Amino acid sequence: MSEQNPNFYLARVALVAQPTQNALRAYSAVTGTWASLTVPVDTGDTFLLGGNTALVAQPVQNVLRAFSAITGTWVSLTVPVDTGDTFLVDTNVALVAQPTQNALRAFSAITGTWASLGVAVDTGDTFLVDTSVALVAQPTQNALRGFSAHTGAWTSLVVAVDTGDTFRVSGNVALVVQPTQNALRAFSAITGGPWDSLVVPVDTGDTFLVGTNVALVAQPTQNELRAYSAVTGTWASLGVAVDTGDTFLVGGNTAFVAQPTRNALRAFSAITGAWTSLTVPVDPGDLFLVGSDA
Image 1 (cartoon, rainbow, N blue to C red):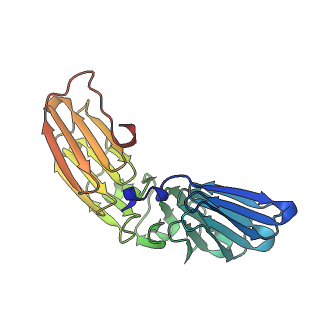
Image 2 (cartoon, rainbow, N blue to C red):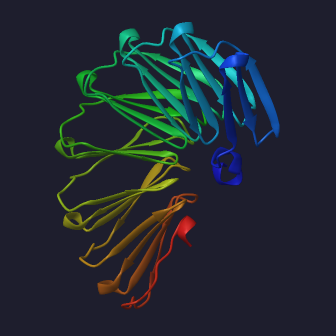
Image 3 (tube, rainbow, N blue to C red):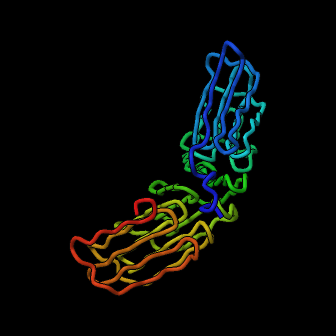
């Protein structure tokens, strides 16, 4: 499981580009070794580093090169690299959007492989990357596409993408809030499988928080707390009043809710996918810490 393998999350790669030696050298702290590649290093090359991933785009060679600190190896993809291409890197994912080729390409540092998707890339598309997940929202195609670094594969969902939609990514979770469709949609990079959707009213005043393996949705007008676990890939709801003055925190595998007016503390575990409640007085001055903040 992801929290048992720190290699998936910690920054463990160094990149050295040496034009006079025609060399790209990368160091992996996971393997403790250097990996060198003898290739031209040119003016106009793009170098991006993200945790366990190094991405090198080389237009004059029509090459995309990626290095995985987890596998300790280079992987190359021979494709045209054009003006207007978009490159995003974060921890275990490199995302490349190429409009002139109608292509979305992603590299997973966990699997050490590229995954390509032949789709039109349009003006107005939204690209988000964090840790082990990439999210692409494409309004002109009515499509949401998610990439999982854990599985190394894309998953698509054909739905209307509207003005006013909210997109969040963090860790292994992509969250999509769609008021005009009364929908909450989530994608888990850990399972890498289908999207998990929840058809509920989405109201002004709702609160949305995303952490490594958990998404929290608080909905006062519905007296509802909803949480999504990237570990189980499912939603869990709790029918409770959500009040002014409630405190919401997410971190790592935990969502935490403190509710003074009801003398209640509620916690959600992304690992079990379940809520646990504790009826205790919550006082002014109480301190709440979750996940990496604890």
